[in-house]
Amino acid sequence: MNRTIFVLGDSVPAPRTEDEAPMAGWGQKIEDLLVGPVEVANYARSAMTTRKYFTERFPAMLNRMKRSDIVLIGFGCVDHMIHNGTRYVPIPEYRELLRLFATYVHQEGGIPVMVTPMARYAFSATGEVLNTLGHYPQAMREVADRLGVPLIDLNQRTTQLWSEIGPMRLRQYFSWVDAGEHPLHPDGSIDSTHLNHTGASEVARIVVADLCNLGVLDKADVSVERLMEPPVMPPLSGEFTVQTPEAALYAQPVGEAPRITKPAPGGLAGPMVKLTGAAAPGTHYLLFFEQGHYLGGTGVGSAGQWSWRRSVNWPAGDHVVQCVGLRADGCSAAVEHRFTVLTDVPPPVVNGPADGAFSGPRPRFSGTVRPGVTKIVLLEGDVLIGATGVNDNGEWAFTHAHPWRPGVHTVNVIALFGAAESAPTPRTFKVVGIPDDSPIRALGASRHACGDVCEHRPFAGDW
Image (tube, rainbow, N blue to C red):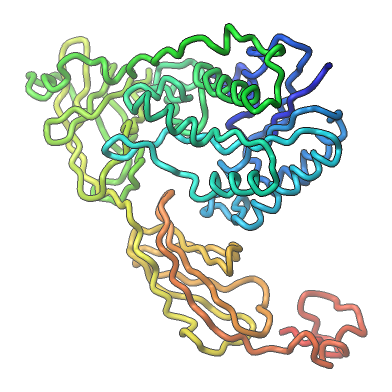
């Protein structure tokens, strides 16, 4: 029986062209493992959330789907981005949209299979794989269990695999290249979310194996030889093959020291901070140290540009990094660079409105937060209602573009620094206004308003 495996999701499983090398999506590698009359239709696309996909791409997929087709539903890598108001999908909405995806597919005779989002390349300072996706993988597990929908727990499977591979080798699975290493990325590319072709093939093997184990895919349609190939441990990343790197600290320096431009000297940085800068002509590789201990290294582009991120997260606190350039005629002088890593963001202080106070329909929120924190977001329930920046003194203010309905409201205010977020600071207040069931509303509704706030008679209750 001819069947199609549809892949729904975001940029991680999405198909990639040669112009996007070395990036590859695991969805495009599924067909390499199939031998039977099964085709793959990869409908995954970059920046897709459950909400965006449901209305933009899902109807076209349903029109093409036949009975007994398999539909892989894999979202969550984008939905959790609370720092991006156009992409953030709160957990309750995420759950409901997953239910709707599965329901539509099932009603049309397809077989929905939920796929939890893949773990990122993110390790703690001591080498444990970090969860960067919050409660979204668990939310999908719970929805699948409640609906009785087959589940591929790709998050759990890749977390386990990444742990076995370790931070010194896992880079070989990701679209992460040094400056000068790949012709399409002369400045380098540090990507801890998207896979390269090797990594995509390994993740596709997990997906296809689980489809067989779940009884969704017939083993006769699968290349058992390819599926059962023994796993090969990827080689060490190039930065960990440097012989006796510490010797560079004690060599007679030759030439100009490299320059580190980011993070700002003495500034705040997140635990996954990327260092960038430039090196003098003739420098082909950089070595990084802290207190004489080798941390890693990176190549240098043809114009001297470079970027580097540590294979594990930085611990919180003050850091002094030394960088030495390797040249054909020896080692450069060392440069020191200081910065402070912030891992725990303190909750913001909310000065207004006062807790329990009355407010008009356009309350102004304001407060302070630790200087250096970059953003404040406000949520009512789980719904993101707004965001605002923070000035150099740690002060912030926000007024929503629309009036609030009368009644009691509780808003949670969260501070963001990079991918880290604080605990919420709740603030409850009471809005004074015209209730929806007031006769004033009925009088105002007798005419069409000419705008959000109409100055003509009768008054409709909005200011």
